[in-house]
Length: 475
Ligand code: HEM
Image (tube, rainbow, N blue to C red; front, top):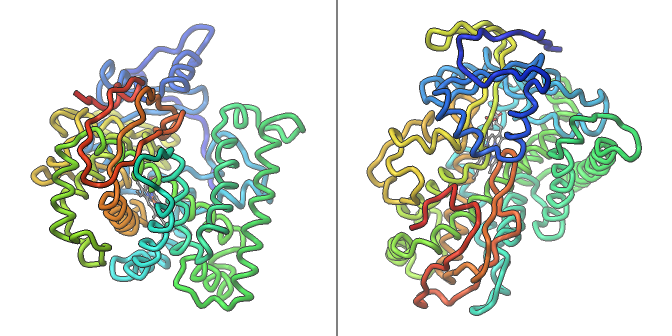
């Protein structure tokens, strides 16, 4: 087991002061209630490296592509969140622990071994076998949509993303099983992201942590049931879960049962959660930018002419890809991420100790004007001419641990959006306030009600209010 001792960070890194009585509480509260503007303010006030120190757990925030490169390219020196290292301890042998022991939370040789064993199943050549399943569930989802009708785009796309992820990750029925598992997982994650569940980690009835433990037990029961059934059925599928079950059966030392269960939940959630956000934000942004939508539609007409996408036609869609990338730039699935230094290290002229948490923010780096001109504007066309390194544009993170599902996710987004946009156009329901919330992601907290129109019908963007105007400049 890895352990780390509390450390101090030198005062020569600028940052907010520790208040005499309140300590770091004011910064923490500000961050909890307004995470995005707090991140941006910290960079504006203190520069590209900011010292924060939450008691025994000091942190530096870095907002610079070169710093990102130094940290992210060296995963052996800078660990991802690891349950043995975070301040809140999840009880050993608990369902909560096994449900969260997945690849994004592992480190070292074991992580690298599991990752390299699964990597071939995410290779571009391999993933085209999921093309048809993605087309099929997208058509199924929009079959009931009618021009003139209204849908909550957030709910619709979150569900569709669960269906889309089901075939490659679980190999189950998307609507009956994938969605049910995803919904339970989301209820569990909601409690996990309740600050009180983690600030008061007591497994006592009435405490949110107790509720979290109960949800995790149920989650484990569901995942165990799925694994048992897949074994009975003979593990003939191409899905990642079948591959992992075989790996576990062949050598339980190499992949333990807990790791199998944890990989299953984290891989499934990793597969649907960011896809859902990218889908509804791309649709919303295109609905507010008719010129960009027109260019996407010309491209789709030339490439598909109203037909379903093929594996070849989704390969070459620079305008649609530009729109998706802009949605991910403006609304990255993870607005910040962290690594823990496992050794002393130097960043610029600063010598920082082992045990320092390093926080990086795709949200902030994506808004640096020196990197992305007119950063608050939705400009899919920038991707036709601008080049950005993986340490500047990092919705999938970067370095050896970048998202294993990058190609799969991009393929699925292009398939789904090309089907939906060839059938419908959208306008935001008049009177809607688009207010966003989320500690680590950006979601429209009251949904995204949109009116459906037959494709080609002339529509204009809807005027609307809400704090999303702080995230994107619309006029
Ligand atoms: C729009 C689509 C997606 C986005 C934006 C996205 C984003 C990310 C990010 C930012 C990370 C790194 C987190 C960190 O550094 O802390 C990550 C890791 C990961 N993602 Fe994705 N992801 C997407 C799709 C997928 C899909 C489709 C799958 C699988 C079905 C997947 C599975 C994973 C896994 C297993 C990891 C952990 C990799 C490792 O630790 O080595 N993701 N993803």
